[in-house]
Length: 166
Image (cartoon, rainbow, N blue to C red):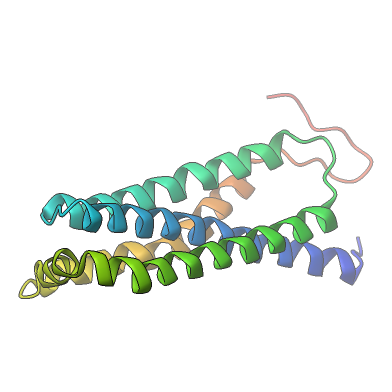
């Protein structure tokens, strides 16, 4: 069976931009929660770990929701979904940039002491920051592993045949 190149590139683009969108969305949630903690002057293990946990949980929930959405559709317009995922990613990058702008203009001037205290938290505990970084990087292999597992369990029928009921 030969698949045309446009379909393959649309599927690759959809997968790539969906992955980037899900990860960026979870990172935006982490940045928002960090800023809320800074504004409220909360500097503790809670303010350090809650954004990490929130981000990773949002990543997993959104990943499984998107996969469930795709699995439950009878027909998919891959090109339309690819374009939508690119636009969503671009929108998330704009939001992420705005959050950084707000942080640099507003939070660093109005809540400078709280921000410095937040930055000083755990500066001598390098393992904390290594674990935090590992959670950010862990999203990529988790995305791939979940896709591999889901692809293996999907009941796909050969061309011109219907899938057998389970």
